[in-house]
Length: 477
Image (cartoon, rainbow, N blue to C red; front, top):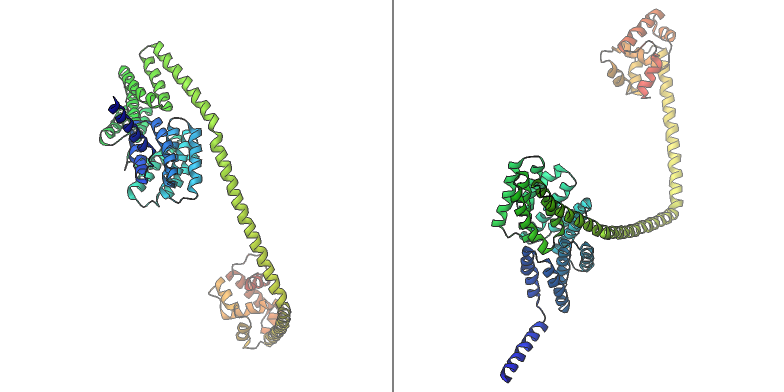
């Protein structure tokens, strides 16, 4: 008896020592990867919650921040799946605060992804898509290719669901093609549902069986199996095989009720009620309809109670953004003020020099303008005299004084003769028909005919004054 007692005490002491021993980083990582994945496949979400709560404590004991943050994220996803979104958001916020001082692309991508799945569960699909986009952007920085691709395609899968709920079909088709590289049962189930809705039973049958094939070829969670069974049930209703539908839905419910997936139960209850209605079993129809109604009301109330969480977070994020914007604005104002002070100082210091230079420049410009004006006046006077004297060099000198004149006139009509261009120059200088006739020793009637022919060549309307048009055209007015 004494030997047995001693042996028992030794065993108890050994167990206590093992329990008291701290976990290593390797052990925590192993549990959070392999152990977590195994429990997800089994649908043991309550076990995940207990496991991760323990690992938070273990990680804190050895100051292992990554293990602690991973536990918060794993807790958040398990709580979201079991419809405890309120606490799920709280653990995400804890993880987010811890990540502010811990740079890890994989964890940051998971954080944004889980925020997206939570928003999706509450029907906030546009906000969910924004979170998924953030997650994808960060995921591209992950060095491990396998982890990077898994994170990206998980986001694609949920974005597909979000676009589907928003009835954005162009985006749905885009993400269906993207998700085909790493398909999950729900991808094919979603496509099958769309075909059922459109009355394409054969196509729906094809995609439900493709979802079922994944159960045999991949490590799919127990929830995935429940989803496939429910899809077979819905397909059987469409095929009017109502007893078979009840069997499939019953098997699906057995799984989802056991692991606490209320929203999946809700879908099955509605389908069960529909199947029993077609079987003329009013009692069972009403039983499942009542279960559906009660559960739907319960979930609606839960969602109303927690909708303030994402809204509060959004407001907090907006307040933080506004604060940062104010800081940036203040910095810009200070920078501008300092720049203005420097400019004023430099301006004041150099004002006397600048003023002197400006005055000298103005004086120089004034002298140049006066000189230029004098030259213009002299040239104009010279041209007038040459015109009155019918000087044969008049046209040559006119082109020197007004170098743009010839080119402008030829733009209107390239067939203008020198005599016509010379006549135009007289008109440009302001001479009347009578004066032109006098200076060129021609009859007034001849000059009038020349004017008439010139107007035709220039395509001028009868109401246009030739002299006014020419000055406006040449001077660009």
